[in-house]
Amino acid sequence: GGSGGAVWLQAPKIFVDTGAIVSAAGGSGGFGGTNNGQGGSGGLGRIRLSLDPTATVGTVLLGSFNPVPKGVTSTGTVFSTGTITAGNAYIGYYPQ
Image (tube, rainbow, N blue to C red):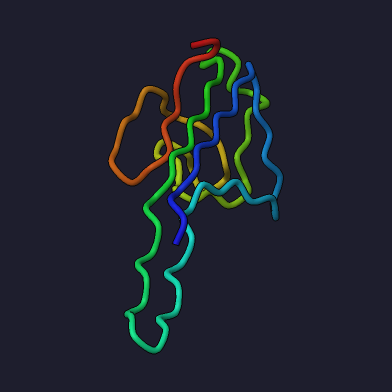
């Protein structure tokens, strides 16, 4: 499968509505032929969200993310920036 991609969203406030999908997931593995085995799945992609932590009112992340951002409540409110965790999207400071 194809490798995961990269998504970078940068703005003072970011709104991702319910039902929206932001994904950097890799592709699934291919099917093997007569004389060869099945291909492996692609790796996890990367998502970075850069927003202004002083303007978090108005930043809402309700959609689906793959990988998932760490530091976001179940209501989509950002409560943490600068969190780096393996397997999670990164939330950084705007405009950096």
